[in-house]
Length: 445
Length: 66
Ligand code: HEM
Ligand code: SF4
Image (cartoon, rainbow over all chains, first blue to last red; front, side, top):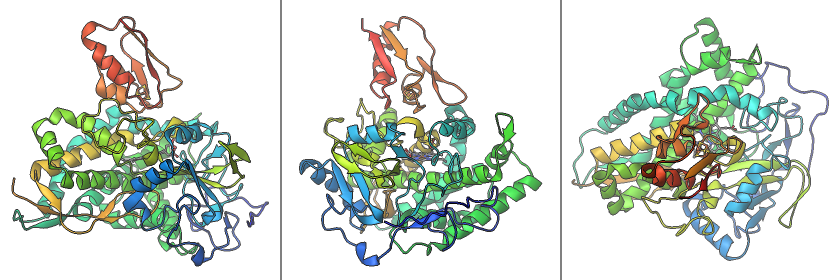
């Protein structure tokens, strides 16, 4: 394993959002930020055995993930392993996922996206990490998280409902004339993928025309993890783009999340530009493909289950429970950790700097935690699902995500009470699981 | 019936506030706050149980059934 962290240089403060380092992926040779795991494309590609050669970027993983987890569980392998990415462990039971999420001593959040390039001890600006608070560990995590909590608390999010609804209706209108029984729309491309990016862009006060750019950033950060380090160009531009937005907000302050972050005080000090920019990157990456995937998977389910569609229409009260069941059964987000120090984890000899995947979606299908775990029960009454994580990193955007998911489903089924799959669904690659192409045929009411 | 909310365990998933707003409020940081101190009235007991059994962090407990 190579470890080429340059001991002396750590990044200049406030330089990241000027004209230099990429934040994700491998930075160019000679910079101090990322170590290179030796990369041989032949080491990647199709997986033969998920127990010993796990790779969530295998193109067959996301389409078949529930079966993969089931096989691992039934074969008596609760912790899969892989030599890919320089070494990675994947615990799949609810108990173990819970244990890792809570054990911040042995598992650091310094990096949460296992990929071919990975950060060394000095890689992330101390103490909060590159994209606070998701990259922060205790005790600094609480400090980095605190200023972000108020804008995403339930009562601040509730007023966005009308705007989300107008947006969803607009997207449905844009689908044009619909001939029931014939018209096919893409529920991922024409609908789901446009919702979260628009909302977070508006909250941040970024130009609407840049939505496609944000999606490209997210794609580069999350879906190209098994490619040659340094080739994810979209990300190189992200720091620069956000630097420009911060500058624009400095010159023209306004009532939005970016200005809020630039002015909020922590112990009497404003946040550095690096901190503000890092949190903005996080909001873009964490908020976009996650919610888009949740909306898409829910519509994918509804396309195949007319009884559940009918129940939602006849009994709107069930929505509170249905949303949580969509989130449980089709949880879109798997997170990563790095092993902070050598550790015997339930008999697995984990080494410092190994990756650990935290598949919350697998935990959500653990039969020890949920009755009929592989069954979708639209009014499941007891549902302590972990779709938004467990412990201190609980999804900051969960209230917004729930709102978007609920309104998106309500509006879709109210416009199109009947629809079915019309061709192949294409699933995402990597840690965020959801449909990227989802053609559905609209049927008569 | 009595319910107890462990503020140390609560991570602000807000399931309780969504399911039983008569019993739980949220503060400006999204952390749950118990509105009601003491005995849970009969008509809210099902909701209290529902909130407790949906908290992902096991922060809510029914301390005294009745
Ligand atoms: C259905 C949609 C979503 C799901 C399933 C989801 C899931 C998650 C999960 C599992 C974590 C925990 C990460 C960890 O343990 O390392 C997380 C963290 C986070 N999420 Fe989400 N997320 C969603 C939507 C959003 C949205 C819409 C936003 C904001 C606009 C957002 C912002 C964040 C932030 C800032 C964190 C980091 C919190 C921290 O480290 O303290 N997420 N999310
Ligand atoms: S459901 Fe649990 S974690 Fe969530 S706000 Fe209520 S008490 Fe806190």
